[in-house]
Image 1 (cartoon, rainbow, N blue to C red):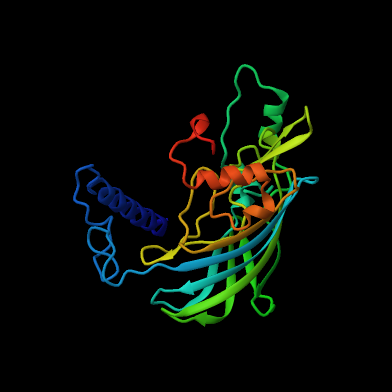
Image 2 (cartoon, rainbow, N blue to C red):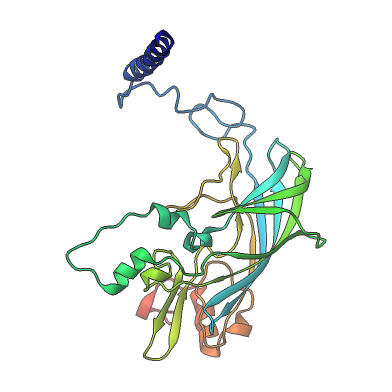
Length: 296
């Protein structure tokens, strides 16, 4: 009995010490900002600005992607060239699989909150209860440029690729080949991933689909001097920064589709009508927009 009392007293003293320390921590909004920022070094100054040895990783993409308008599906393959400009050897890479936010096992569904109003439609109720839509990236392969398979591990919206040999600091470079596909979600149906930033919208009058495709390809996560790898889970309500690099993208869609995308169009004569091509050329030197310009 005496031993139990001694243990209880010891635990009580530890608890009291923790509470006392917490209460004496400066929580003021005007407290000195000494612990929030790292010590200045050659990579970053005390203000957070780049230092003399600052570096960023470089990632280039060569992507070929196709839209299946019959099954509302995306199919793609890419070659990723990753350049290690950091002073650290890297034995693995982290990639973002943002489309997994609509996977049935997504953390987004598990952490989402909702409320019932006075009136709830059947569709809204179904959206709260049903997360069975077969969404998310389906990775077909991950291999090096010679075709040799690479070991990879998918952790919900993140994928780690283990490298056969470490990327050496400053000059290390590797090329990855990745094949993937995913089912596009219906943005109007809460049960089919309507919270996703991308998706399709059906116009039943003429049977056409409008697609807004976002976060659609496996892409490298950031590795920097401040956090190392950024491998937090994507929950759909925020964006993560990405490494800089060059993109070469070939998009294949049915002939009656019109694509709006960023970038520099490389084959305008092959994909635009004569009238579209004329307006496209006029737009390059246009100074006005809308109906006041022939290129509008």
